[in-house]
Length: 304
Ligand code: HSE
Image (cartoon, helix red, strand yellow):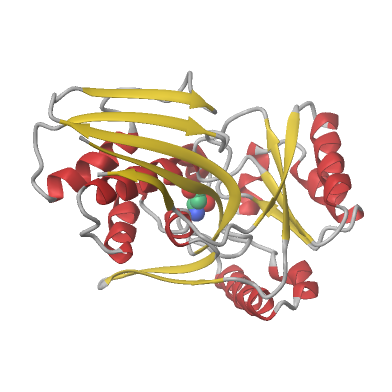
């Protein structure tokens, strides 16, 4: 019997203009305990966020990720016991599914002798999730710039030189990534693509150099946010409320519906203003004050 516990951060993808390419890990965590045993039985216990919605059978994506690694090593007929303790809100744009996938891969890799590199885990995770912008920071931590290439998923991770606060307003309704992608157009005008390329480039430079005053311009987007606005009632009002309290910029977190403000000051005031603006539009919300996680997925206990 081997047992491992891994801790995986939530993530905020897109970061405005970096649709399906840029993501950062946040200081909010799920943990997963995995026990492999000879008995051959599978069980999944889920606590915390999403415990009544997440399936505890073969549909569970953490279990699917564990099995992917076991199958890779041709380890069959083993008992799999999983215990998930979740703090990342489910289906709110904070990478809960990426965290589950990465937890399953990293835990299964640990109990099978750590034979797969992070690069291989990234490619496996991207194949399951379909895009790398949540799974990459969940694995590596920090800010991750990812590309899907014929040669595999490539990711460059870095940390900004100074502390950056992330204030996330999490509305009480959920929004699946599938639904949030269905509202996007199949093609976009060239000028919108240029708009985003210029912002995404500025964003990376601003974060890497700590030139945070540029975030005001660099977080703008025309590829996904304008289409998703109708799915998040009050979005513009929440953006304005955060800016009024001194936020450097505000975006949809991932596919939404959470909205995330970047700031170096007034964290609580920004969070409360965002929640109040949501409530004025009939939506209950809570806020979390987070930072960029610097570690990514981490093994916190291992019993061989
Ligand atoms: N890049 C993805 C999207 C993130 O915006 O749809 C959500 O998984």
